[in-house]
Image 1 (cartoon, rainbow, N blue to C red):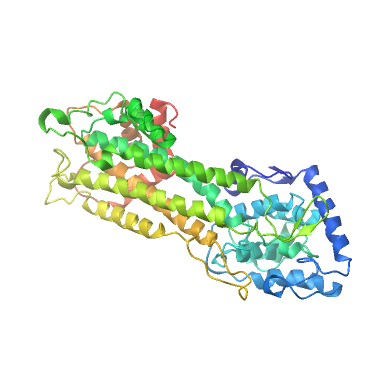
Image 2 (cartoon, rainbow, N blue to C red):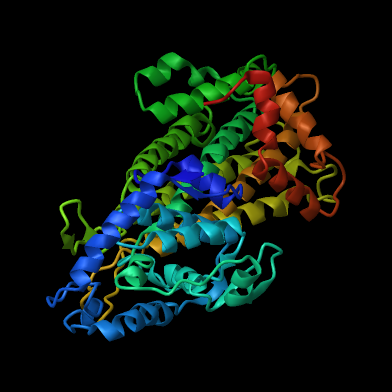
Length: 509
């Protein structure tokens, strides 16, 4: 992965964070780094104070720092800001954070020396992952504590995880891989800390996960529609064309593709007249589609942020070093919260369909709780309880973090975005949504198999066959249910559900 001066793509971030891709600096980036550093060095030699170069930081920015103390100042800001607490953050998040900080450093707007950027790339390539903690970022002035823990590793201090997964002193790991610790100079400590990189990395990964999950949710909604003998007429393209939300049309088309050739749809008119299916069935494309459109907006924000150079102060092409507020995480924080709301609603409608499959008064002929011998067997009763608990937590996680702000730095930083917190709760929401969709899959496939005499759509049958081969068991007497649900979770999480269906339908939207 070659890092230049003009930003990176979401695919680049995923390749480094999740795929372990190697990182190189382009000749253009090295030249830009050197040019910006010349400007910083020239300003450092002048008697006039320049923020971040020859002054303190935040509320302490009024103190002019003498030349002999400036290296100590840069070390101190890293050490003092590496103040995170709580559980360790996932390896992929830390790698994304480090890569995105390197992207901004290579823009030529930060004033960092080329050798510092090269060390960042070397640490990534060595598979060394700084220990970063859950708490410590308010999403303003950058993800300060998380980025500080990463900068501490560059200095050979603190703790990091080696490529073998063992946490050890960072200095030992650097030495083993022939990496010399950096000795920070003017502005460099500040430049390594001042960005939205953590929340942006988590946004990029959440979007990738949600894109796959929304396809999975369209499939399970279609399976539930089949199992409930619902009508696919509501999915007709002409109906969605008159309300032209792109996501809605895509979800409806996905469901229609899955249901093509089904003998189960539409039969409810024969012996149990229903004018319309319930909202959780009939409005599935509208709800999932709104979430898809939310993702499209979030993706636009992510693309803009990926093209940005976030630092304070910044080095401008004309030689000025100017303070700014670009580190504020509001643009990213808002969409992180928006995605958590959409994910919670998608989970909520999926749970309602599952509950309908299990209720003999609303399932149109299915046994209570899809049990083998109702009364002796409880069937999937408690699977739905688990699903409901997950959905309930997702509703709490949908409360926006970005609506909060807590002042810091002696009221200098008196409004913050809480974007890191928004990103952390979105990761939990995405995890829970996967489990919710898996439980709907488990219930819907069992329900379809209990509809004797009518064949499901070929795509539905492909999903059922693949699920059974993956250890997601079908109807039968009560058994230890947790392993079945875990198998369903893995089947969805690893992309096998979408892959099985697309072998029949072709690529889904």
